[in-house]
Structure formats: structure tokens, C-alpha cells
Image (tube, rainbow, N blue to C red):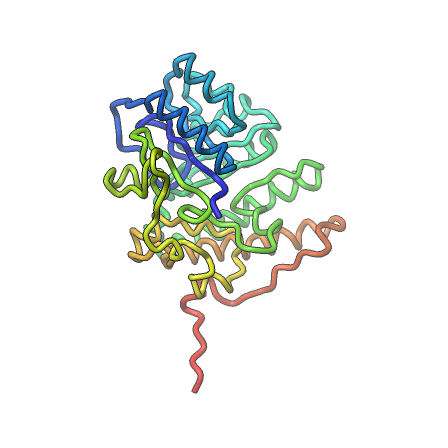
Length: 316
């Protein structure tokens, strides 16, 4: 069931996920299209997330946006970034920890090379925000050595997260705390729980599909969305994922299609990094419990694999 609509206000609106914004010339969504999108969202009773460009919107756009409950997602360099509900930074080093506040939710997009070089800087960011999402944009390029380095990085970062919890600051950090809080899958949901409306008035599975191929739409605002084989985007039709307990795994539909040619089948790299995060979350949970009682009903079982697709039992 559709729960969210992402409204991409401009062709240059910020990315908050793995995909890159490859349009340089602004193309603002027509005001009439925006109003239709807001009305459609009200009728369908979906939650709205607005993706903003860096330049300030005309007053009539701001007025229309305020007619519906919503979440504003903006680049840190955007003109109105102070009004954002979620602020997006490109690169860990671009984040000025002193400018943050404990009620902020931020997204940091980074490549793996920069993450490995700069992840220690997150120690200064974690005490300053309520939620930190780190998105490694080139996760599909991970190799065996990268998995080892990633595990070591998360082990170090878990110390800082533990200290925050012990100090009564239960910061949310997607790579380490999301799995601790979940009892079922909570993935990307593009194509099943969320859709995107692009500036051209057409629906897409997510913004990445718009940037990859503008003709790859799934309907328009006048006629509504229409996905071919919508069941393929649902967890119930993913036989491995539906019994997996890396509940926080992003399962990015766009990355799935790029790497495995199937929207519902993650790549080895996505599975492996998600399980490394799962195992680090398990150790973090145990570490916090050394100090005092914490989430007594939550258990994360120990496993001996990082890719469930390779953990196949052959019955003889």
C-alpha cells in the first residue's frame, strides 16, 4: 500500500540516497502540477516529502507547500536550509559539527574512499544531532578488502554511539542503531510504499529512475500511477529477503536493478554491508547492556555469514 509520495520540486533537487543528480539546468515543477500533486496526496492520504533545489522557491510555491503536512529535504547549501526537516550534506568533511543542533536530522552522502578516510569525523557529529544517516553512494563497488575495513570502521563508531546512549543521548545512526530498534523489515519501499513525482508531472519508482531515463515513468499526475508487475517490488515476492533478519537493509530498488537486473534482488555488496552492520549492531547492543538494562525484549542472534545468498543448504 502506498504510504509516501516524494515530490521532486526541480530537476536539480537534492539527492538523499545513492543516486547522483545529473541535471545542471534548473527546471521547476509547474505550479499547477504542484497543486495537483498536493490534492492527489490528500485524496490518497499519503505522507509527502518535498525535495528542494538550492535556490529559494517563489512565494506562491512556498504557500502551496504549506497547505499539506510534509517533510522538507534540502541540501545543506540550499538558500532555505534553515527551514529543512532533513538536511543533506555531500561528504563527511563538509559537515560543520558546531553548526548542528540536537533536534536535527541529517543525511551525509559519501563515497567509500572518503568514508574510510573520514569516518572518525562522525564522532564529533553524533553528539550534535538526533538522527544521522550515512549513505555510501558507491556501495556496489565494495570488494573483499572494503568489507574488512568497513567492519573495523563500524566497530570504532560503535564506541561513540555507546557513549551517547550511556550519556542519555539516544542518537539514531542508521548504520548501527536502526537494526537494534526493528523487529521486521523496514526497507526502501520504492515501488511498493513510495513513489516519486518528478518536475515533468510524471511518476517514477524513485528519483533515481527519473535521472537514469526520463521515459521510464509509471504514470502521470492526471491519470495516476500504474506500475507493471507491481508485485515485484513487494517483500513477499523476494524469497531470500523475506526471511532475512537484516531488517534495516536498504534494499535499494534502483541499485538492485543496476547490479542484478531485478528490482527485488539485492547485490552481494548490499547484502554483505547490511549484514556487517547487523553484526555491529548486535555487538553494540551487548555493549550498552554491560552498563545497564536496555531493550530487554530485543535479541539479535549470532550468525556466521554476511551474505545469505551464499548460505545455501543443499539437501542430499
